[in-house]
Length: 264
Image (cartoon, rainbow, N blue to C red; front, side):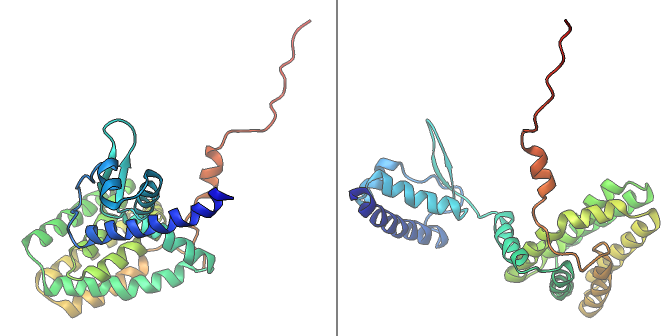
């Protein structure tokens, strides 16, 4: 009974300690890459037990704010939360609500063309160089009928539009959406025929020209049209973030194997 009564208090104090450390991380007192003080230093600084401190660190680790290395020479290091971890939680919520890819694509078409327009309004030579490199890689792959290389270049081009745009909030939200459809999009690109890949490569080159000339309205319109071809058919399919067949294949085969016959 004593242990059961103490547990909520440890958890509550651990959350409070995690909150203090979290504020120090987000306000820059503990920058990305910083090693946290040792357990001894932290327990003394907060006046708490090791169990409470470890509860706080587990909370921060679950939020992607720190990485804990176990064993000798280990400890906590401040990290940037991984977008894929955020998108997984996001995907679960959407999947539980029976969200379709059509619904997801509509959201993406509202965001990414706007980012392309903003990139046309505000870009530098590095932005253009990165986009040009991806567009040329897509053209070369399409001309060579190399589906794997084209899929990688196409994915890179879309990612650059998001990363190079000048709005952090929309860029992050777009990354979350792209994480949900990336595998599906890459699969569709690998199934495309050569003419379709070449058409897409020309579309990338056209967008690059619109961005280079600062034509924001043209970039928005063009990318809105292009994104209708990005996802393979069957848009009413439900989002399925987890590949259950792959997971099942990784499990041990527990089926009873026949006993080999022995010669007599």
